[in-house]
Amino acid sequence: MKLSPSKKSLEPKVGCIASAMEIVGNKWTALIIRDLFEGSKRFGELEISVGNINPRTLSQRLDDLENHGIITKKSYSEVPPRVEYTLTRKGRDLLPIIEQMATWGTKYYDQPDCA
Image (cartoon, rainbow, N blue to C red; front, side, top):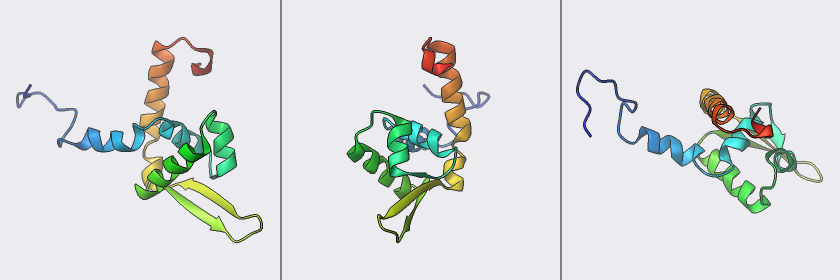
């Protein structure tokens, strides 16, 4: 359906929503971003805070987010090695989207964890 010139489009350029969904549309990704809004976290901390995520899946999601410029990964030369993940400015710009997802979930799903 083509919009008339008087109607505002939700998507100024075709493909913008698809591009955003490529990043936040994967299972677990929004929860990882949510948890990084609190500040930098180590892998083990994310594993616990996200909950029930397979370590391999977490590793893949973190790699994807880093490749998209949503997070940075900082390695420390310590024994044992320490790695911290932090949101970039681009990642922090996702805050309104994550907040709206939480608002929508609270409105339409009556789950104790959504309150």
